[in-house]
Image 1: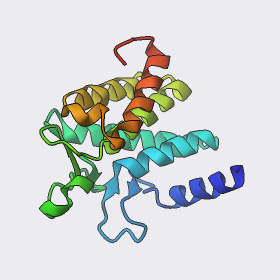
Image 2: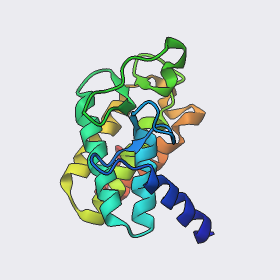
Image 3: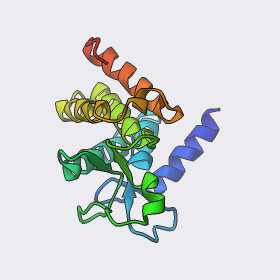
Length: 173
């Protein structure tokens, strides 16, 4: 139902930081942190609803998030509007804050959904930055444990890989 989808998009858009383009990790914005998965969801929803401005803002926030993470073996999923990753969190809650290539049973969608969103944004706008970052996120995912393609949390990686294949024709995806 498009009416339900539109309301979901409007809600996500109401959670978008108007400076950075990221989406807050909590509705009440208590932590002040932005989050990769929610930002990717907004990017895709905005594209589907024709709000290119909001989609581009979300995509640019994902580009910034990817750059903040650098080339480490960990991908932190939350960051602050000032550009600092949220790398301090209770160890018992790490799965919500980081994807660690050295551990299995990760929430892989926190990286795979941004990968798909950036590829979709590339399809819409033709800006190579989105495609290059999507490929880099794919490469990060390949550096994860073998369950990255076997666990229930890997479905978004399959979808994102299919989108990358559609765009590039490269069978490695």
